[in-house]
Length: 91
Image 1: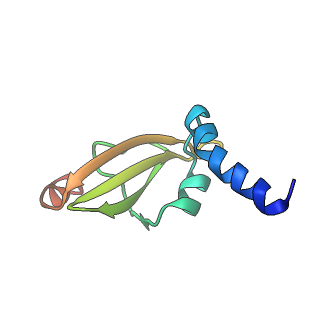
Image 2: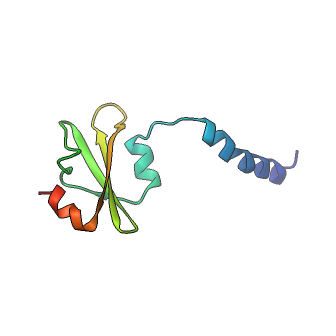
């Protein structure tokens, strides 16, 4: 099989394989794949012991992801806030 054809075949099959394969979101994967900013503290809704938060912006919302400090730092929470309500949750 020619290398170019093999690459095209792999790329065509990738979405089907990805759709059937469940993956846990770890901070390592998130950090590499998603543009974000570190938060000094988590919003009250997501704040738990040994948890840290990161935020992304999309449309008119801020999306906050909470990760555990245990093991590979799995995703343990998620919340979206409109810009208007963000100040209320970060107090």
